[in-house]
Image 1 (cartoon, rainbow, N blue to C red):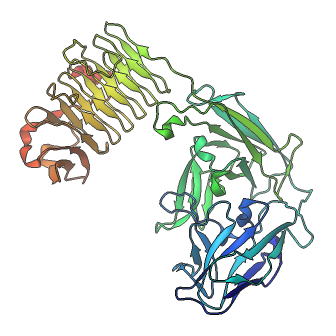
Image 2 (tube, rainbow, N blue to C red):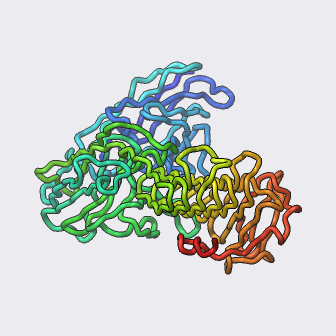
Image 3 (tube, rainbow, N blue to C red):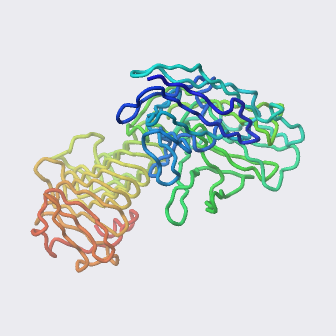
Length: 533
């Protein structure tokens, strides 16, 4: 078979929203199931696809909000593959960077689809993009590449002079340090010369790399309508002044100033005052890597205010550069053999009380908190203090060591070991892992405490008749408790709320009775903990 490509136009004008139709002709028999070909693209920029309307951009996973590799080609005819039941468009999957080859299946001798050029706000020189049928098995190519030009308007580039001028600058430390609250925030400044129109000025801040948002304290959320349908994306975790404080799309409004741009390259927002700022924190990458440290050395990222048709760039230029350093290594905080009161900071820290009855507060960060010796050993047979440990925010690892300890994870998904002694373990907010003893055949009668709305904890070593379950006073009673067998495990739930408070590993539900439960007061600080000792 012979395959040829043609288009109905070769000049695309953004201001006129030109529609281009790609036509394929097959001279010969179409095999059963269709003839697979590729539409190859030769463009100066891998993001050529953003020159066309939303139909041609990569799609977005509605559950995660992440960009994936689906191309949506409208008004298909004679093409095989997956057709969207919503729009009737052709869904082409597995189109990856640099987006230079689109797989297609020709189901008929004549096939076509359309693309609509996108009138973006950027002043651009005329661009040329070439399309051709790629070489493949079972056919020959009988047409030359088709080159189309894309320009702002019939007159060419649009760059008006009677628009506001934005002076773009940065303020903050010369070197930003991850996990250092005194040196991890920078601010982008926008000073407008000229009148800010009533509708505001939409600005775009773009990085020199893809998917840069996770580097900063910027989270992407999904905007949905009242029926749960996906509409678009917006970002939170930012602090702005002088920007519109809400985004409205398709009649749905969210209280956010910014939204992400394609491929996670940056954000866009609308300035509504003559002076605007956008403050950003840099993230500690170890929080994403799941490691205590993730050494990257010095990183340099350039951020640019993209020049558009609605404003001009001031003499200070449109690009700033930030330098990011790894978080400083934090020395362990070690107490003495007396009764210590030790408190962490917002950083990831290791704190150990040593011998004595200590009070340890983890504060923020993903901390390692130890009641006695600063060691991973379980300290069986050694003396230890009766310690009180609160994890604070963050995903902490807490070990009581020897002694009768009160251990609270607080916020975050924590791992808590009671170790030797009769301990009280409270995961509190988050999905925590609780280990009463230390894996060495048990050491103590432990109390595992659960409250409403705190997540689902997993208890690895609950021993019926030795350990007990604590019910937070005033939140629910034993009459509301449900015990459900789930394989080898027991699910501890509350009938009135439908919550599953805990998973008791390798425990038979039928073996647990009212005598295994104790009502305990709510404990949220050391003073309340001391009151129940």
